[in-house]
Length: 226
Length: 88
Image (cartoon, rainbow over all chains, first blue to last red; front, side, top):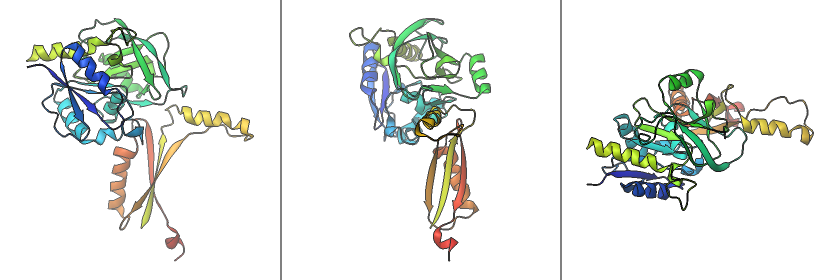
């Protein structure tokens, strides 16, 4: 039986189809999950895609966090289900308190869209095992509210525990504290980042294929576990 | 019917680039002497029934879990007197 990776569609999600495509290219079966679903349809992992769920009303990710599908995802993520949040998905994970910190408006106020160089700081999470620590990758970044903030104590904890998964290279694109582009929870099954690996899985459409490793990482982990 | 107002503001240590952009526009518009602007949100909740301690406690819970993200924001809950209560 093939590995099933759920991709949630909220009203306002944009990158759900690209995430499904990336899952397929990595060799797993993408499963569309709807925001009103309470069942996850026996998926082995979940991706929360980019976009503007519920129009980004109130705060980015704040309303999505209370959707029926998220209630189940929060419960199962705490029990070890691999969950990847990309861009708006990262914001949803922070609003859900599955990941610490919050995403705030870019310090220069501009929406930013460019290919971004990152350093993989932690290659032992469910979503980064196919990379090596210190590896540099380039994937697209596109957001208006991508400034990662947390209090100093939380930032120190994240650094000490190796939970900063990605850091921006060259220049900080949005004012994120300590150049943080992505973080993980203590168990390493939940990862969130602002840049978009699902847009860098094919040389025809992406700047690189550096993003494919996210999807092959989780696939290998799940196959090894079964 | 009573109105409860919830104000939500970014914490002082969180950068507010929107507020800064507003502040920087002021001299150009001829408004001098304003050294800082912070932008926040105001929610007006029309409450059915009495606004007693129990109702306010529920609203504080609502503000803490939903209206504000307490990682980056502070909130303030207060009851707003309606016109009929002020002038019976």
